[in-house]
Length: 100
Image (tube, rainbow, N blue to C red):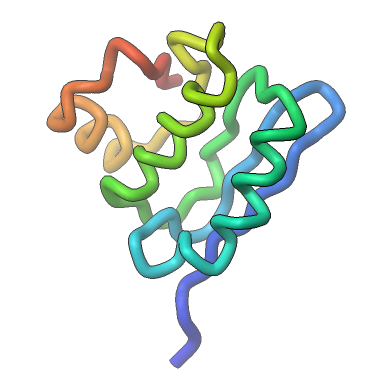
């Protein structure tokens, strides 16, 4: 059985595309590379349309983007799933993320 993976890519227009599994078990393998990217580049919006599974650790990734982009509140997230919307609402961070 293959382990779920998180993938990411930052486009020239500042769109961070996240894909795969944004979960507590998948994020650690990519955390150092993503953290370095966030330290070096500005993210204007996040595309989460290709995210297949997300938990609170995935929401924490979105909050990290805000932390690194101090002026990105609310952070624009396009392609949000119902699962992401529910977690964001229950977590009480819906004012920080603009989900579409």
